[in-house]
Image (cartoon, rainbow, N blue to C red; front, side, top):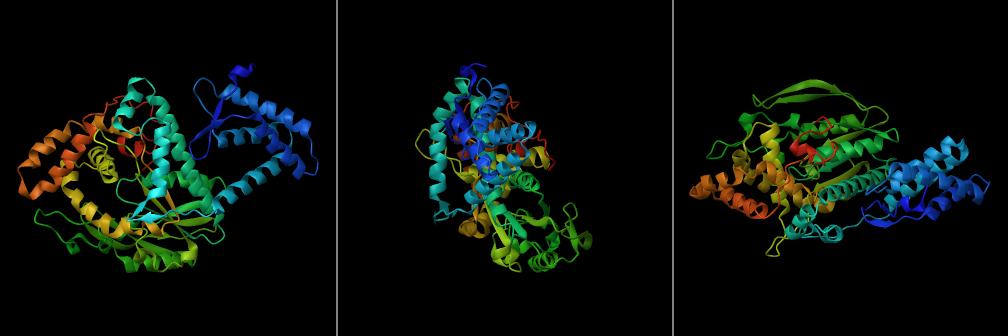
Length: 448
């Protein structure tokens, strides 16, 4: 096998590229032999050579392995060579390193509800991958490198979700409740699935409590002059019953959760029995998960709070950056159209409720989170534009002269001005079936 076929780069856990070096593999295996009290450099070199041969066979062309991919191959080679003790030591070493990374203080400064350090790191990543502006993103598409950007962005997101899972595992001794919160259409559902996959790999399982079933009957919700109901406030949920059930579940008791019928707007109590098994961690996936009253019955030591948001850094021609809320509005307009039988016009006119609740009950609590995860995908706008663009000019015209719908008009115009210069990408086959974007455009291998 020629050295010309050897990977030149690997993808780190933060999504950045570093030079491939077989010596690092050799050193890791050598440390495993030392842990087994039989240090053997020659054996380590022989095994690392086999790892490299497997890498070359599996990754070719512009395909790049990640750190996790290489570690998986090392485990496989050790087992195939009947190096059982070495494999056990290597797996233990790998787990210890993961715990060490996770237990490092994850700090992020929040000023005016903005994690500036986090968004600076995202901007640097975008600049390194030449997708930090509309102009550079269009250039990626025109030069035929859009598929490369998709792969890199998917690897980055998977790596970041993996870090969040590692941080949870580091707290697993006391962890009883995982809270995944964030504003509308930030990708909480797919993020939850990916976190669950990582926990399952070590024998832990997330068991979700469906907060939507705790809505009060619709007749108790206020309506505006348009007849629209406000589902977005946490006060539309039975917070007392939620806390009672959380406390009982974590105490090992069986509860009967309610069922809310969205078609009739009526809640039925005591419908579904729920109980946590010994290897299950309770999951609360909710817009308002970080709102203090939502989980007041659970001591802080038993909680892990993950906040997800589209922290994309995309600069327009005039130098301004895309609004994160507009990114999510575009996603939600498409998701509502494809999966909820609500046309984009309806999403636009309801969005002021969404934003009002986010600004009051969700975004101010970002500083309470243990981990902030960026769910913006730098390749998504060209794909979303191809599916949504025809609705935007129509929305602008419909609401332009309506004094009661100026909020919808302003948002539609802002989306129009953002998407207009972006090259649309019609073919979504390059988007993996497990991509977070599939939550909004359809075709996911996950069941939502």
